[in-house]
Length: 325
Length: 136
Image (tube, rainbow over all chains, first blue to last red; front, side, top):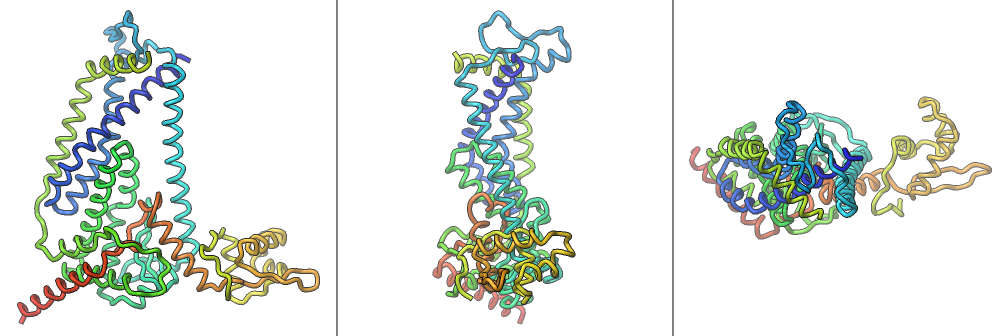
């Protein structure tokens, strides 16, 4: 039972760190968006991805840091770090704690339940998405020298769907309407998404940024999405050797989707990202991106968190003591 | 054909195969469907009967009693069904939890608006003309 009490304390600390890290990263989002605005899309995408996983990575590093004294004590029992005379909960695997109390157990159950619900709903949504694609009885075919699933339907559709092994889905309507040059651009764009594992990274970013403030998280994920689209536009432009052709294809596709037709989609005017992408393709390609510097800074922060395990451990125990009593 | 569900129901593997068989003009009596599909798959007549019943309950098949047996016919055409399914795929995948698993070349449900589109078309055409002139 005492091991359960200790695990409960570690989980409580983990939830606290995740919330705190979410707040800190949320406060940094506007600066990160400004700093990376002039970077190449690929560098910006990496930087924003790092920002979105930062809350979870920082929380895990902090939990590891507060567990380090007892892990060290288990490895070398001599230097006992615990101030056993202190009447506070022990984040210690040597001196196990009693349960932190009913309300904290309830809170933990709620957090774990919410986490399980999110994962379940994501898994169900993914399974439903896969079933919906199967429903269309797609036929595998080569389009512009790339493998694609061709689905029936008059609407112009071109997308990549799937997380681990995404597939390009193209509608017969699009094949009938689009020029060979447009199809090449689109297939190269979708192939770039698959090469870069963009859908998988997006799922990860959504999950790891959960504890951020909603507005900051929304702007971060929207910028992440746009940067991944722009990075694929750039890769597509490199492969077809013509940035303007990619811009033309984007505009042509936007025109096709805007055309009054018996559309089966519910359409809204919103931040489609097309204007930004076209303008970026008409501007000279960007060269800069200090992603390595940003990554190095993040590694330093993690190292500092781990190195300050002793004060962090005691501060967390004190904070948990105040919270519980 | 009429009475197409606005959102076609999700079909299991066998249900989709049975629908495809009937859409291709296959005979709609359970025994005939079993003879065409069931034997090769090693499934019983009962399974085929309950599959046909499920498809009827989902609104995809109509049925008529001929002597002692039900004869099933599609209520929804293949095109109609697939058109609905494509719309459903897009509307479900481009919103909510599933949005993360899709990347569309151009967002399918969010439009930039006519004024943006016209401006972009002008910009792109202008650039194409400039390049053309420079080449000459």
